[in-house]
Length: 352
Image (tube, rainbow, N blue to C red; front, side, top):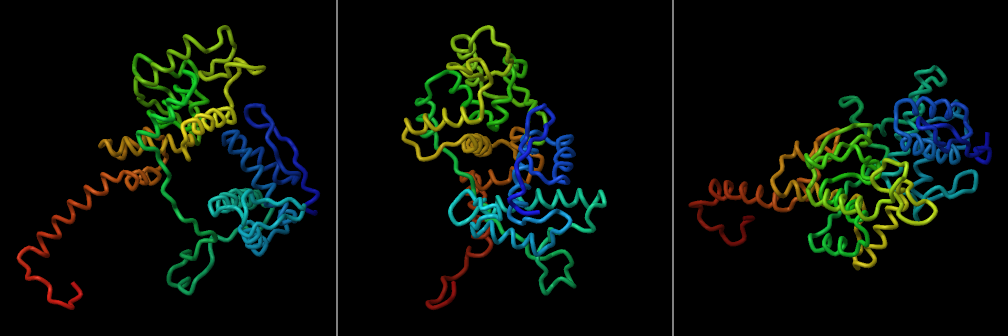
């Protein structure tokens, strides 16, 4: 099999939609399996990542070895084209470490599935590179891909005000309010249905959260005020869709708003407001950071955000500068009292 033989095909996802696949029979079997336990977007992402992998490796699954996986990592980071002549990375100099790690996770899951079925004897994706301490510390090798964890960017109150002022409709202001006041993800905003709004309780029911997790969360009355204005003055009457946010004009009028449409709305507002950054995820980060700065318990922030693990929520401790500064000042006072009180001044030339 050659990379050029790997042509996109279509497989049905759980909702009946088409998900791009790759013409590798075992990969198609895996995608069908994945569709029964994951959300459609996850299946589509897995299909794309597998297509990237096999177009670079250009071997059937049964012939893939650890050396092929390591060569794939190098090709992705270096920005080299696959065997089909298509440059896989989406940015100059190769894809980011986060993307490579995600693709390796998908590939590893695929081969683990094949190993469980008995199609391959072992998973060719190494768990890590061995070190000299392998005997004393088994499975404590070097990760295949090192990723620098960067703090997400957030918006200042002035930037949030400028962005909201640049929005042109009640619908757009309601969507931004859901993210910046409720911490909702973009997909969660677009997935809201009219029955999910609990205006009397000032809460919304998230039925399409990440990983299929549902939650009922509180949200500011400003969001419900914006939604009420949108429903009364802008939402087309008599449409079939029960999605809260729909297209207002054009041939798709009344149909659910898409991810691309949402990004275009935000990009236009960002440009009019003169902001260098203001993505949907940055609005969510801004909300969760402000909640932590205001004293909301980390476990409560986790519930609001819909994080499966509290480790994902701990990043907001680092974003909340006031919390870190307060913790440092408290500790520094104790250190000063224990170490420096009553101590003579350090002699010239000493380390202290």
